[in-house]
Image (cartoon, rainbow, N blue to C red; front, top):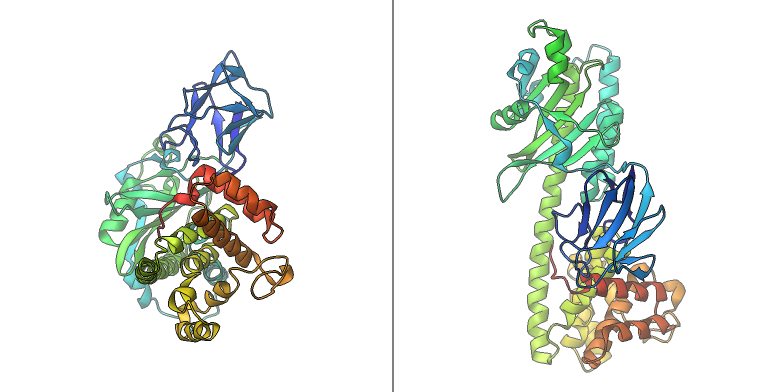
Length: 475
């Protein structure tokens, strides 16, 4: 078997096994392996097998396909280590089977069997508050273990970025419970359907078997469900039927966000494993409460950021219109955000860069004449606590690594975010001053300028080629 591995770009690390059918590569979500590259066609190229060998061919793409930097003119045999280049995205042809944990619903096999519920214990999630504490009894080993797991679960949530929470806590539950698979199903806001948001399995590339019946009842009745190993349930006739249906030991609990059941947290063990017990259901229900609160906090943060962004963007747009600088802040914000993404900064850091880019010239717009007036504007802006981390970035947005900027701040005093913002501001000002100049030539000038970080400036080229430099702002 052979596989393709994406070596760079936003999908870096994604792998896909090449089997006995052609594997398409392209920008479309229906492509066999999707790449997020503006230079790629919807279905750009394909790799196909012939007699145990694999060949690659271009599918009449607009920008062509390259093999080891040579443009592909016809079908070409792939050898291990060959690099397929589409736009700026590189895919490596390697031996072996892809082991990357795929989160798509294609991994899941559904098994609906009402007999599975014959050994099921259930209770409303609200009933957790009615569990009595036995203060006079020593904590059992199971209780101590559950308390430890719950504590660690909370630590993971509190120390993770919002987009990192779900995979991290599922990986933790796989090991701590332990479980064979752990999944989050969330309701799609457009279709209303429950779809797998994140899938984790103890064995890479495994396909978990899921009971739709349990998931539906968990959501519709807002109840947590627990079923022991069906092989030990005397109400199911015959071991053969158990094996044939691949019945598992399952715990499924509601995932409530803001008072609404948004989905479920679902874990399972294999037939040969020790079955789950009631304390596992209670533990997972408590974990679900914490996860729901984390989702709610993330939703609230996004709403606040959206409100803040819309307010600031409208204010800047009005001031730019008066000063004949329309779109300057938004373009700088897009460049700063694209660079933050290319350099894999956290979402919070990227958000700061985006806002700082929008506001980088706010002081000049408000007080174009004297430095005293500009300091007065900084003083007024400082009264807004939400800008505490942004204002220092605005102050240094035109500083240069060689110390020749307006404040004389040099390389050692400019962190990564400050360097990114200075490159974004310089790129916008150069582009605005010479609107007919070639974009790549403008970028190359910044790369060679000793006042800017050449590696950060060099990232602009990739952002230009993959289109992220021009994507509309979204929160």
